[in-house]
Amino acid sequence: MHVSKDPTGLYGLMAEFDSAQSIVDASIKAVAAGYTKLEAYTPIPIEELNDIIHKKRTVLPRLVLFMAFCGMMTGFTLQYWASVIEYPLNIGGRPLATWPAFVIPSYELTILFAALTAAIGMIAMNGLPQPYHPVFNVERFSLASSDKFFLVIEAADTHFATDQTGSFLQGLGAKGVYDVAY
Amino acid sequence: MVFWIVGLIPDLATMRDRATSNVKRVVFGTLALGWRGSARHWHRYEVASLILAGLSTPLVLSVHSVVSFDFAVSVIPGWHATIFPPYFVAGAIYSGFGMVLTLAIPIRAAYKLDHLITMKHIDNMAKVMLATGLIVAYGYGMEAFFGWYSANPYERFMLWNRMTGPFGWSYWLLIFINAVLIHVLWFKSVRLNLKYMFALSLIVNLAMWLERFVIIVTSLHRDFLPSSWDMYAPTKWDFMMFSGTIGLFLTLFFLFMRFVPMIAMFEVRTLLPEAKVHVPRGHDAHGSGH
Figure (spheres, helix red, strand yellow):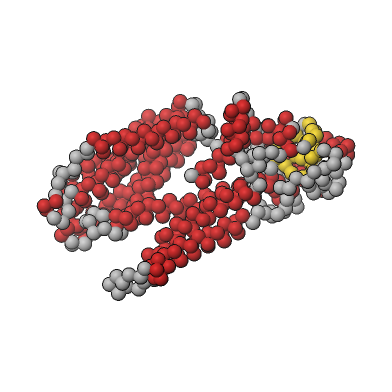
């Protein structure tokens, strides 16, 4: 995620919630209020939050499918090249391009490419490894990996105004609202 | 390996945030890659996990099929068999569950994980073992049937030698465990008794070791040339290799238990009441489940 710097030195405002339901409700209201640059941080996967906040689903599955196909072609062409072009051996007059024998290595490379793409692709698309992020400046945020749920509205949002956004987040039932410094 | 590391990332972030010393914070912080648990991260994470799970499922079948092909392409009677792929896959699931029980039952008792590894889990694992064990037993039956039905003198000799030859004890012990003893798992009182289940898991591990012994040794010690017939006796190197593999596994396993969560923390968290979500209609953009 690109972090655009705000002249006030504030990354955004962070609201703390106690349950998955309360952060989902808060996100729905924040999106309805017109905020677009917001993000929820939760200790558990809540698939609904992505649909509410980001609307778009990831292209990762299509990327994996494409790379799986590349893996299959790599495995097949490697064997085809070795046994038909580079070093053809006549074994009892059998055809050189014996595709059934090529299936297993092609299949294995399909799985290898797909699995590595799924893992590395997920990490890279998430922008990881990323040791620093402004949200870590909030002390309470260390609970985001245990049992607290956080909603951050960025200062870069066109609807953002420190006081109004702060009271808006309070009004959503937040247990606390914190400034997120750079 | 990839699946395992990906599965650890959110838990490593938890350990980073709970770290009590700077060394731990730096080590777990580095390994967690800066995981923040944002909605976008979790979404990609869940999609990637689903894909990895989907990819590893057919891998279970292919790994054992390929290993069994290594046997099947040889001309040695007892190895040259088309029944091997399905029977190896069933055997792998069977012995895999046996091994998981061997490890899980003592750990569950030592770390008091009764509420995480419940009796229902153990009961279900026992049922999977019963089903796959019976498939394996059917495999033995078919192996014997094909040996006879092929009318091939070498196949018939291999079978007769396997049953009544000098290593006959290993074959009959194998048959006794995987085709006879396994039937005790039909009884719920056995499946829900941890002592019996632990003993049975050890016996199943023994039987699946015997299966490899029977396949490899009894087929090789009487091959086509009587001049090369011999008896197999393990050397001290065999014993050292065998105990070394067990030692290596247990060392890595205990290190894993000591340093990272044995059970995925974030997945257990999703079972808590605070994790339940109901989204009103019209807000769930894709109408996906809850």
